[in-house]
Length: 305
Image (cartoon, rainbow, N blue to C red; front, side, top):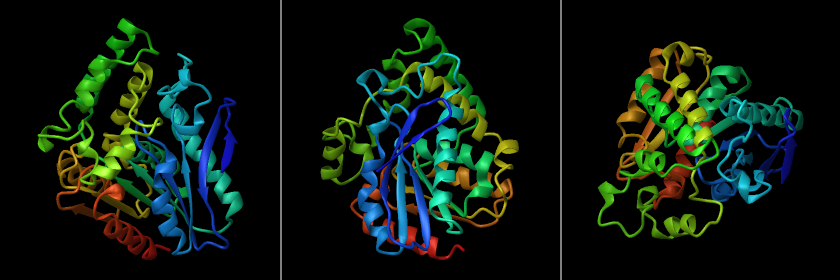
């Protein structure tokens, strides 16, 4: 277990599964309303292949939260751009890992919201990575996020920046379960494995709402990563692996992930792989075929460096 104190004196918690003399290091950026400890099974698998694994708890998530009133808030300072804050936390973590593992290749895996943050990181600091893995990601045009950001701004005026809007949650996630009705739970869209869905539901660190300010800043970040001139700042020689389930509503049931691959290719990424899993849902690392997903990840990593 690691804790890093970043520039604004915020403490960031990092789950760690290190091994002696690893051949590679993987840093994981988790998704919205979850936390890094959920990646332990993947980390243990990768340990067996000589990879040290670390998973950050983003601000407002997991053990990076000191008190309940911090849950769901990237930052509570109205002057902060919390998109830059969460990317800065990743940057500080990568720098720290480079001091622990000099000359060891470092990979970044971002899931869902973490994939968007990871793209923001790669735009700024892509040269610090040897590979980028994006799980459960998506691409939408900037105007889509601009419209959503107006709603987040209006909800901030109505409820305050620390409010947590039912409207935003409904517009973001309300339709995700429709394809899986009659659904056993409201989170059936996460995985076909009912045990994994129940683990998520029963985890006190999962399933909460993000604050209005956090949504507004996140949507600003999504606008940034939806523009080709920004994606073009990712080093063209950075290897990128995208994977998702064909039944993942976050990625538009495969369409948004394919579009992301097209956008990255158009912007110059030369080493790009896309894998869509038939009938897979949002959390492929927690799916009924997770062993296949794990093996595909390590097979791809083996091809790099």
